[in-house]
Length: 257
Image (tube, rainbow, N blue to C red; front, side, top):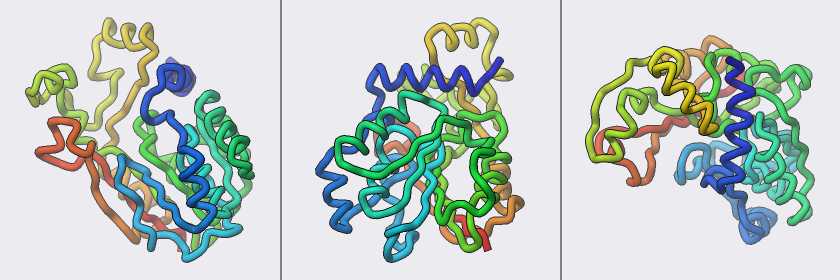
């Protein structure tokens, strides 16, 4: 099965359904960013620390990687950066284009996978923003290698990703208030779901997600050449049962020295 193609179509469906991660920022937010008052998040609603960024991002070349939806990209463009958004979903990119047109922003979009950035030359960007998205690829290591390749020396990768512990539990049971361990880590739908469950996901246009090990997600960045210069955790802001027990998301600041 072509996971990338399927997830591309599934994200297009999420836009159609108005899912929260497909809702673009409003004009008030981009106007504030034009005046230097901005922040972005790459996990849930917890903002990336402002001191993780240069004092000014005016003129910086920023890649918003697997970051369609009209959220991070337009804010950074409004703050003066030269922004390119890459995403597998055409409809997510249309959200960015809509905000750029509405708010008179200069922003480029490219439909493509985060695992293969062949359309960029080496050392093309000063900064990469990668919100929680690597759950949608089977192998996360090419993401880090490609990010390292297209960053300039001294460039920064800010990546949000899922704590694989989240995938231990049965989602349907959690909805009933029960945390039942059902799966193992690393999590793959192709190994953990029955054929009937997989076909149901395909029929309902649901995304396929993968619970990568922390070794692949953190040590994978280090092996690609990065130095980890920042780290924090966040959760679903109290909206899920698991928030009582652990943090579901991790954000790292990685530097290409």
